[in-house]
Image 1 (cartoon, helix red, strand yellow):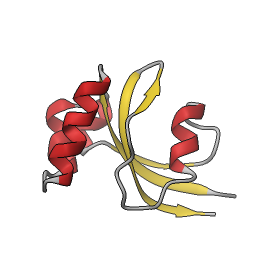
Image 2: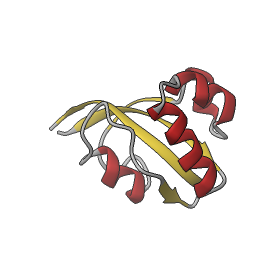
Image 3: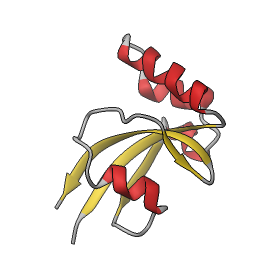
Image 4: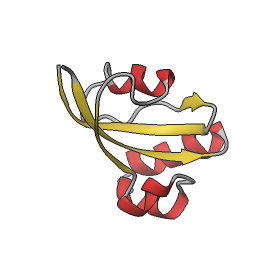
Length: 93
C-alpha cells in the first residue's frame, strides 16, 4: 500500500502562499517558515504531518502528495482549510 511523509504550511490566502513559496525558493527554511506562519497545529513541528496513506487527507492534498516529486515545494493547493504549500519528504508506491 502506498504511503507518504510530507510537510505543509497552511495559510489563509493564495497570496500568502505564493509569498512563502518565493521565500523558500530564495533560501528560506521551510520548517522555520511553517513554525512562524502556518495556521495548522503541525506548524509547531515545522509542518511535518507524519506518514499517511491515500485517502487519509482531503482529496486536493492527496492528489499533490501522491503525484509530486519528493523534495519539491508545490504550487499553492486550495482546500476547505485554506491554502497549502506541500513538500513530499518521501513516498512508497
